[in-house]
Image (cartoon, rainbow, N blue to C red):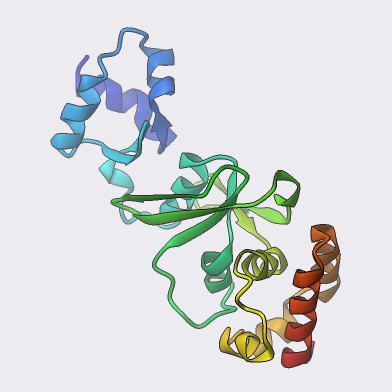
Amino acid sequence: MNFIDFRRKMIDLACFNVNQVYAWEPDFNRNNLVRWINNGLIIRLRQGYYTFPEYIGKPDYPFYFANRIYRPSYISLHTALAFYGMIPEAVMQITSVTSLKTAVFSNAFGEYSYKSMKAELIFGFDLKTMNDGRTLLFASPEKALLDLLYLYPFYDSEQDMQDLRLDDSFLNEDLNKDLLKEYTSRFENKALEKRISRLIKIYGL
């Protein structure tokens, strides 16, 4: 198989896996992928998942790949909080929540971290549309905050809540307090409820 035909077939997928390749070409020689990676013609995202260098630098594609290479998952935690402007820090990792086991992957688009939660806690995410019409699974601000306090229980005291340096204007103008309470109850976790109560007290919500 020549690369030109392969590229023509696969490039619009943006992210493709080896099973999609075999579905199209059952006799495909997987050694081609190794050779094309070595020649810089395709990029390995993780074992069995690939893209093309044309996607480097395109807005939102690092997020898109986060959704695609480890499913089911949605972007949450520090990445979502930074996206919404709720925390001041720039975030280097792309952080997601999954019902699969915890995992970390590194590739040309960045470092991807996935934190595991029970399947019944995989909720509270929205579809966000990219410029080219593809969609991303992103935690709502309320769920991203809950995911953080649930998965990182060392954020516990009033001082810990202050150290998060959450944006006051976002919390008071944009955060849906009723949704935060509803989502908190769905966790059925007393320790999380106490942490949320401390956060509400500290930030005057």
